[in-house]
Length: 249
Image (cartoon, rainbow, N blue to C red; front, top):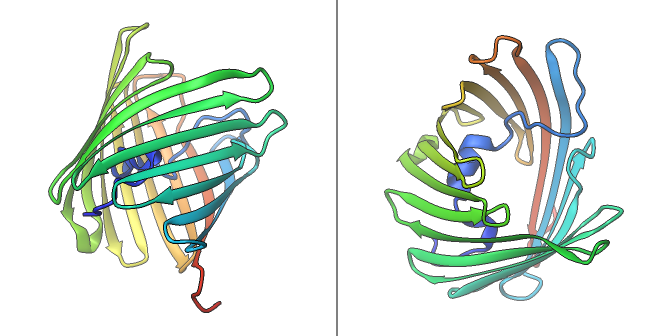
C-alpha cells in the first residue's frame, strides 16, 4: 500500500483499470468490418526524477480517438497535484489536486476549455486504500454522476482480483452495476472479464510481448440487445518510463 495520496486519476484506479482498461470503448472514430470493431495504438512516455517528486507524462492515441495530452505531476507524502493540456485544436486545460495521509485521500479536478473559456468539468472524489480493499466515491459530469468503486486483491502474485462499480445518474435516475475479475494465467498473459447490469459482457486477453509492449485482444457483446453483434478489437500499447539518473537501455 502506497503512503502517498497520489494524483486525482489514481482515485478508484485499481477498479477502473480492471473493469475498463484496454477494453473496447465507444469513440467517434472506429474501424469496423463485420467482426473487427477497432484497431488502435496507444503510446505513453513518462520521465520521473527531474526534481524529487516531479514527473512529466506524454500520452498519444492512434487513430486519434481521444486527443493526446501532456501532463506534469508533483507528488509527496501529503499531497499530489497535476496539470495537463490536450493536444487538440481547442486545447483542454486540466488541473487537479489530492491530499491525504496513509490510507485516506480526497481531491478534486477541473477542466477549462481554452477556446470557449468555460469550465467543462468539475469533479471531486475520495479514496480509502487498505491492504485488503480499495474503495472510492466520485462525483463527476457536472455533479450528475455518482460512482462508487471497489477493488479486492485476491492473489497479488498472479494479479488476481475482483472489482465492482456502482453508477447513479441523477438526471436520468439510472443506476448501473458493473462487476469484473482478472487473473494472470502466465507471467506474460493477463485475462479480464466484465459484466454489466444492462446486459453488456466483455472479455480481454493481454499479452506482454516485451517489457514495454502490450498486445490486447478484447471482445464485447450485449445480450439484451437483439440487434447488437459481438465486437472484437485489437490494441497495441507502448509504455516507456524512465527515472532521471538511470542508465539508458
